[in-house]
Length: 190
Image (cartoon, rainbow, N blue to C red):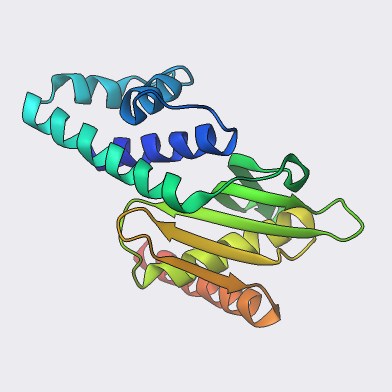
């Protein structure tokens, strides 16, 4: 249910960014999410859950969306907001594939004054992994576009905490170090 909760909240983000009205936050997010899904396993798990689990999820999703709505604000179309941006970067001739999902990307790398900000939404409290996640987002976006994003941020719909980092050479160097550590740990485990 936690995975479904996260998917519904990020679906609601898309609806909010594009200024779609909500009659019921849970039902509207569920309808929008279902309209884009071929895999019905999460929906089947929800339907098979008992009434208490379903009610808790409905209330939980409504609460998370309420926090998101209260803190998100609006985006001018000139900011070019994009939601659910999937990125894949091939390195070393395709031997290494970096994949990333950005919940909200605002700005452009094509303008003369390129400025891009990335936002990750989480339904969990911000923890020690948040910094690494933000660095990873910055690294993948830089490799993909050749332009360093201006900033990366993570927002928790559980606590309404927001972590914002300006992206510079130090952030990107740490991201490369994080990736190297992960790859060496993975190679040792294999």
